[in-house]
Length: 353
Image (cartoon, rainbow, N blue to C red):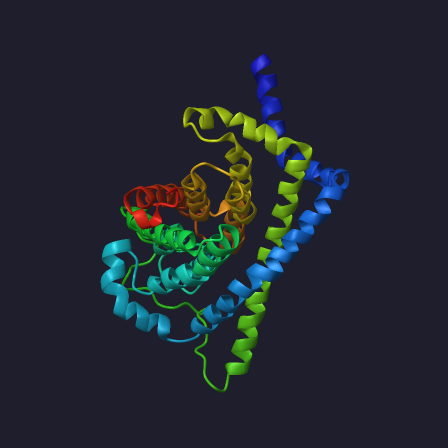
């Protein structure tokens, strides 16, 4: 009887967990409004001054390129490399390249478009999700390296290890669902009726307008996530929850002999990478390499904020979010590992000297 009663309360707690979280968040907005208002303004400023200028043009360019035959031509050229390395048809190279140069969440947006247009199979698109959604060079070298660490070389190191980890994840995930029956034959995929119309001078105006509207919709979605997570982190700090969470993982830091001051910024970065990385870069440590290694992990993982952005983008398809989640965790670990190796093997990247 006790067991049945216990199970009843567990089921009830699971059912009401999210409503309770949202209720707590709503009351916290009122309770900590004084500290939350600057956080919301900071989130809006981050979105307006960093996210829009660095990502929005790439969104529009990607949408326009999807209306050309460049992706098919690129696929024909790079198929000999993409298939052996990543077990993905050549067209996937477009998602890979744009994901590297553009930043979050361009790679996921392209992979989702590929699935909607039947450019790639479900399994291939899920493999693309695992490694094509990355931080871009403008953010890593410019924002993180130059603005936060005041050192371009640190940004270059982080970008190199970020790309190496990305490629490594892609190679590992070539085996994702390899033995399962493909949702469509590799040679028999044909564009669906939803495929994008090829761009010409006669329809340039309408396609450009469509591309801009689609990009605005996505950039507004990203802005919403940036502001909400800035607010969430502010509430966690003001309520003392962030410090309590940091204390819970304190034994791990003691075991690894790492400064405990990294705990709270790491949790913050796990939620939203920009705030977390900025806090980590400001920690005075005997060895700055520790700051850089933690930064490499967060850049690779991307944070819960980006995860939810990707989830919202893929929600109208049959793509699983699991390869993305597993891939980003692995990306973060490998990026941190490669950064550690580079710092300890190559004197040029040893910033502790």
